[in-house]
Amino acid sequence: MGKLYLFKMLFLSILIGNCMIWLAGCWSSHELSDLMIVTGMGIDKDIESENYVVTLQIINPGEIASQTKTERLEVTSYQTKGKTLYEVMRRISTEVPRKMYLSHIQLIIFGEEFAKEGIGKSLDFISRNHEFRTDFYILVSKGGKAEDILNVLTPTESSPLVSLYSSIEVAEKIWAPTKGVTLDELMRGIISEGINPVLTGVEANGDKEKGSEVKGLEQIRPAAVTKVTGYGAFKKDRLVGWLNESESKGYNYIIDHVESTVGTVPCDEDGIIALEVSKSKTETKAGMKDGKPLITIDTSIEANIGEVQCKIDLLKEESIRKIEKNAERQVVSLMEASVKKAKEELKSDIFGFGETIHRQHPDVWKKIKNHWNETFQDVEVTYNVQYKIRRLGTISNTIEIDK
Image (cartoon, rainbow, N blue to C red):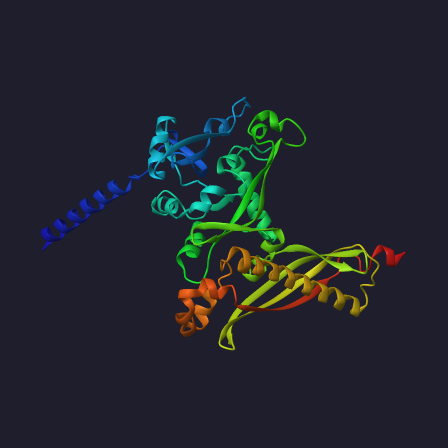
């Protein structure tokens, strides 16, 4: 009995020891000195050859870690062509001395012309490759190529794409006409029934050629800057048009993606009042009216008065009610403009009205899903907005009234 016990203990010790040996190292690990860290990717299409044109922005680790400033930039761009993205990523190894590391990509940008042809095939590579995480943002270069955006240097950050990524996150929280779209959200909009995706637009303003040089930063106003601008609307995987700033804000109100923003309402004949939205909640409901689908949008908003440029007594309740009514009409106008653009020009249900019908009235959806694109253009939409002003600011009345 004692020998059997000792044999069991010896076997267990050997088994544990082997496990510790196998688990001691990471089989898939890579030394940092063997990698080139990619922070962003731009995808365009060469018209003549029909090849993908891929621009990669890569961090120069030596410059990031260096304590002394040199003339070398902290980022570098490489560009290669190929019939597939997989081929491009391998072919670029002829230009760089290390393996591309894609897990730190923060932005992927599609050129506008390429997005109009369809981005579905390129998304197959991005979704299939295990190195890509899903928390990066995907953008469309408005009025230009993706490479134009990647090559513009910024004075505030060592990496242009880090600066652009931060701008999207900040603007999303305090300025409503923008939103960071991830790969999962984009794929859901392409694959799902009753909804089409949008992507945030970005454009390069100024002298793009000088904006890619260090000399372009050696002045108070940079030679070129990148700017997030509105939404690009898609029908499945093809870009079909753009929403301007006001229409993009209306879109975000409808899909319930407004954390905070600023708007203005008229006051008297020639004055305006600026309002800061501090809370917004939207619910979309589907119903039937005369045998046709009816979409009802209920929005409740809380706001603070941020600036007054007119003569008005804010201590009077009727004055506050008047401002709230003007604000309600303003929000409805934004949403109506966004829906009108989608129905009449884009002909794409980017709001997910069809998905709402599918979820709330599946029997109705079965009858109309095969011709929803046509039905969407005639669907009736009603808007109910409740606007409440909660705070007046640190002063209760305007300077003009106090005088």
